[in-house]
Amino acid sequence: MYTGLQHLHSFLAYLVLVSLLIGIANGLMGYLKWRRFEEKDRKLALPALITTHLQFLIGLILYFISPKGLSNFSGEAMADATSRLYILEHPLTMIIAVVLITIGYVRGKKSDDSRKQFFSHWLFFGLGLVLILLRVPWSKFPW
Ligand code: HEM
Ligand code: HEM
Image (cartoon, rainbow, N blue to C red; front, side):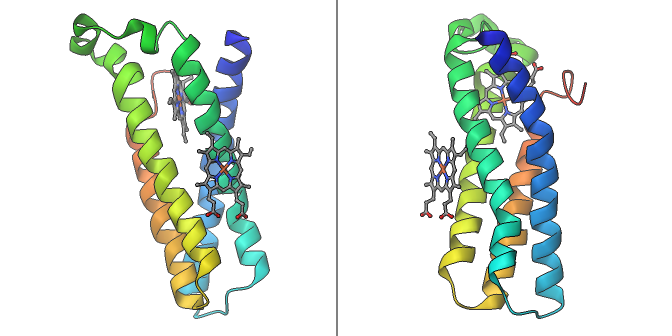
């Protein structure tokens, strides 16, 4: 199960990035063109929410079963940059990113002001994307 989830987590990372870019691009375009926010705009943001939530869930499971996760937590591991990335920096940064993306989507759904809806999509998805890019294990990604 560990290897399967590890591969799924790596593969989903691509879908997370692509769907976030779609959400950000659509949000930014709608915002700049002063368009009216429609149901299709919410649907274009939905893949970003689904892929990040699923990624979060898989990441959480990995954290408990991976030898690079919780079981590796120690003072020594903290002093090593790669170990620290997996036991602390990656999970923490990704959780904050997922929360921001969820806030952006929910604000986009709840507001009835098109400007705010598009704004929430590009701003919060954009912030989430920056955080993800900051703490993805680049030594393993994109290959
Ligand atoms: C521990 C795991 C998860 C947590 C804590 C979580 C949390 C949340 C929260 C807080 C929202 C916003 C609800 C709202 O106010 O509208 C949400 C929405 C959503 N989540 Fe998750 N989620 C998790 C896992 C998943 C998974 C595994 C999927 C699907 C693969 C998923 C799909 C969705 C979808 C589609 C929505 C949006 C529904 C809508 O259109 O309003 N979530 N989730
Ligand atoms: C949007 C969110 C996330 C993205 C894009 C992402 C991406 C990645 C990538 C690309 C890897 C490297 C995979 C490899 O070694 O081949 C990885 C590994 C890992 N991630 Fe995430 N991740 C996310 C969220 C999370 C979360 C929320 C957690 C934990 C709570 C987590 C825990 C882990 C762990 C423990 C590993 C190491 C797995 C192993 O190889 O044993 N990830 N992640």
